[in-house]
Amino acid sequence: MLNKIILAIFLFIFNSPVEAQENEPFIGMFEYKISARDTSQQEMLSTFPMLVYTNDTITRTENFTNQLGVQVSIHHMVLNKSYLLLETAQGKFAIKTDLNDKKIDTVLSQYTFKKKWFKRKIMGIKANRIIASHPNFEEPIEFLYLKKVSSKYNDVFDEVPGLLVRYSIATVDGVLNYEMIRMNEYSPNRGLFGIPSDFNKVSFDEFIVIVTSQNNQKVIEGGE
Image 1: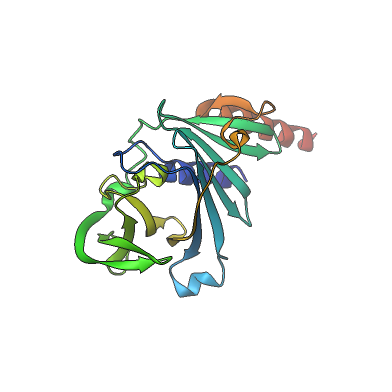
Image 2: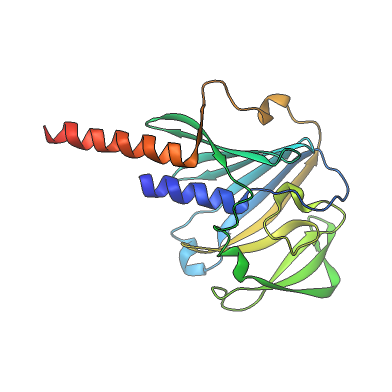
């Protein structure tokens, strides 16, 4: 279980928005559909949603999986601070993530990009095209992005100059496809962007110590 939690944390860090170029401001919500690219894996890995709420200063990203339930990331784009909210058997934690630490970006650094002419429609909107290559891709994959909307709301790749609406990420479980299926401009509830008072703010290292020590204690008690 601990390994799954740690994996979930790193997946969130990889996908946590970091501040990028300024384009048109957006306030509202994006919904993405996440699915396995490999057809053989689609039977094992069900499709699940990712929701991104933003007030143009803070983003709240929610991932839903059958294995780990809801995972929430809160990112203040101006202060460049980010917290991963996790509810575990050991308690509720707001884990501070270091967005300036590039040592974990080894997987992302293997991508190369090549812009393409002409546009392609998605959700009835014309999107720009860019071809991405990665050692884990069987062949280059076409990404789509909205050039007029800032990438900061879901900034996975610095090389893409706009909000990604269709892209793929190589993970330890295979290649995952992300596709935006809804874009709703409105004013989200302010409560979405705060850290709940019953969550304990800790660093990643502190979280590992807490979870490991409590798991070890259970093992000791179980052996008595």
